[in-house]
Amino acid sequence: MPANVRFANTNALWGALGVRTLERMGLKHAVISPGSRSTPVAFALAQSKGIHVTVALDERSAGFIALGIAKSTKRPVVLLCTSGTAAANYLPAVIEARLSSTPLIILTADRPPELRDCHSGQTIAQNGIFGVYPVWSTEVAVPSTELSLLRYWRQTLVDGWQRAQSPLKGPVHLNLPFRDPLDPGAAEKGFKMPAGFDLEAFTDLPKAQNPAAKVSPLSALLPLPKTGHGVIIVGPHSEAVPEEFAAAILELSQLSGWPILADGAGTLRGDLADSGRVISTYDSILRNASAAQKLKPKAAVIVGALPTSKVLRKWLEEADVIAVQVNQPGENTDPTHSRWIRRDGKLVARGYEPVIADAKYLDTWNQYQKTALQKLAKVTKVNWPFEGRIIKEIESVLTNDDRLVIGNSMPIRDLEWFYHPTKSGPEVIFNRGANGIDGTVSTAIGASMDGLHTVLVCGDLTFLHDSNALLSAKHHKGDLTVVVVNNNGGGIFNHLPVAQKNVHFEKLWGTPQDTDIGKLCAAHGVTHTRAKTWVNLNKLINVRKRGVRVVEFTTDREKDAAHRIAGLRS
Image (tube, rainbow, N blue to C red; front, side, top):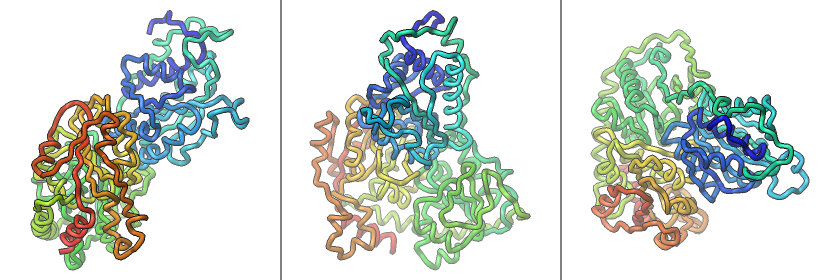
């Protein structure tokens, strides 16, 4: 922007400076929830040629669209709203961002201090509204033309950008009070530009680096506990450089001799499929009490959060292992409360000697895995609409050039149980921070904006819970297929003891909605198709073109749960 650019008021200058600073730091995407008080920043974002702006009417959906973009790009995304309860609707996405270490910059416009606590319209207490979930939260000063405050505003944004990414990645919240006039073209009495102010020169910042997810050096993990009976456990993962991550995990396994127990929500199962070291059937294996006892570990390296499997978690808890945690500084990701030896990103060796590998231990795991794969293949090799087979169809269609977004409740568990790729597969995106169903469709819309062929698999309740995402679907320029597994209710609850002979089960837990998904999609101008056969579903998953398509696949909740339970227990 040339030095002679003039602004009509303080807010216009403040907004332009803020957006240009973020652009210089590397901002590429912003999601805006429409409103009045945020006008100075919204206008500046829309004026920027280097920032892609998405407008989403529903704030909860907007928050998850931003989350999806950040998860796929591994870069901070700006999320902007007006004052009042708009910000409150961002809370579920902020929680997920914090618990999944996803960088967001949340900008909430606000009334100035003199309009608070006096029943001024659309005014609530916004400072600290997101509680403990931001990695940093502050209120910015009311806009001013004083150079000292302009420098402060610039530095606050630089600081926020960096804090969102390091050392503890997550959401940053900046509360922005604005006085009138909000319209960037409205003349402000007494307004003067700072003498000689040049916006481009003022925002000439050192080029920001996008910190990729770095794999912990193996030297930091040594020496490991002296035992041949150890496991490397990798939970849900979405790495910036998956090849480097896979290579590091493989090297650790080769060094220690320990097997890799890898969650299906990630690329590791496929990337290391031919290594002979990945155990993808641990949940099935450990349901066998004899096998669980025989394979009982003495130590574990836990990379990130633990896998979804409750069976695995119980096994670890009972083993009371010495656990080496590899995660973000300051985080404890071990709900089994093992005897862990890592704190704040640094290992405390405590005199442990290097591992003495036990080849028989890995061989035993692989023998059990061979049997488990045969058993699980029988469970999914059915012609009727069994939900677990959907994962096998995904596995056969999607390549490592595609992306899979997996919903919570049953889809994420079916992925863990039935996803056993023989080669590298798609990138996997998930909301496993808080494990909720909030914003799943919105997350997929955000994640698919880059044009990569993306498939979301979710249940009907998850889809309906986020149906306002369809407001952003009609004009979506990415490539997204939403597979709605419609079992008319909450299928995961059919796996709980409460499902057995409880007269209130359907009303309180099954919660069938009886919604016509086709008509819902039509109302939003979104293509809807019912897949009636496996061949049909396979072809629909493989449709690759711009836009959002909803594919509905009807299943029987009770029959499906009974088949899954019987198959996993056999």
